[in-house]
Amino acid sequence: MNIILFGPPGAGKGTQAKYLVKKINGFQISTGDILREEIKRDTDIGKKIINNMNEGKFVNDEIVNSLLKIHVFDPNKKEKLIFDGYPRSLSQAKNLDILLNESNQKIDHIFFLNVNKETIIKRIEKRKILEKRSDDHLDTILKRYYKYLETTKPVLDYYSKNSNFHEIDGTMDIDQITSKIEAFLNV
Ligand code: AMP
Image (tube, rainbow, N blue to C red; front, side, top):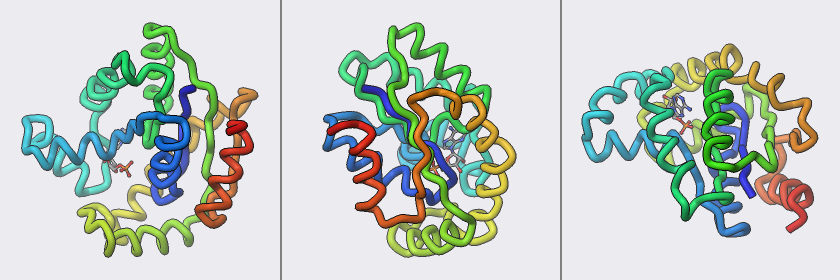
């Protein structure tokens, strides 16, 4: 089973992904985490992306797509992929379709965690204290949110007609969201 968790920054995608990892024995493919790891390890990629990430801008597709590809083609992760933070644009959604097709896979469920701006700001301000992320400052949060509205949200049109697309009220408590997801997954 392959799953996409879709939604604005602060929607709770990472939290639900971690739950799903345990529940279905899956692998969280968080492009944000993968990119932060590159920065932490101070790799060539890390050096290239650090400014964009700190400023809340997208990292360019070439870099993100090549890092993602490794996971999609990892035989251990096949049919157990939980995408968190990818795709973030129509071109990434199309790229994902190509990679899945080439690796003989498909998406089984897409969960759209729908959250309003006020909730996002509250949640990310809280996360800033807990995780000390360098891109969790109010001005950067807003920038990331507007980028989401402009570039990521339109991807919903690409997915929302599919029968495996499920919209969930992401302002609910973590456990309530988890229960909704479980109901769709039948687990
Ligand atoms: P996230 O942890 O998903 O909130 O992502 C943190 C940051 O990583 C984003 O603000 C972007 O700078 C970068 N990033 C993560 N995923 C992507 C993606 N799919 N495409 C481009 N940039 C990304």
